[in-house]
Image 1 (tube, rainbow, N blue to C red):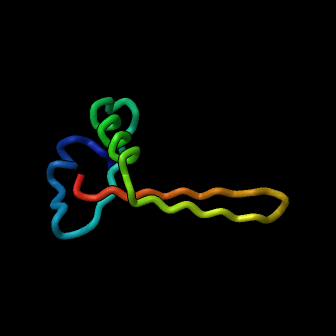
Image 2: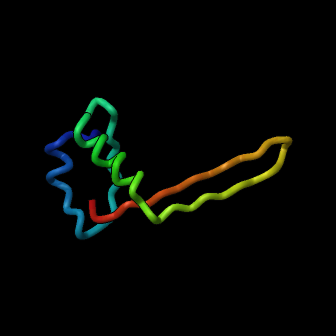
Length: 65
């Protein structure tokens, strides 16, 4: 399903969890989300060493956007 404005407005966020994709061509929305992730305190960072390389995984969660 696409992330059109009308579709997003019709989703009831209180009953379930949804993930909508915001692309850079949605300037205002994309910048707002990007700023929220930069301010986020709920961050997880994991390091893994193996197969002659170092892998870093990072995850952040924002809610009530």
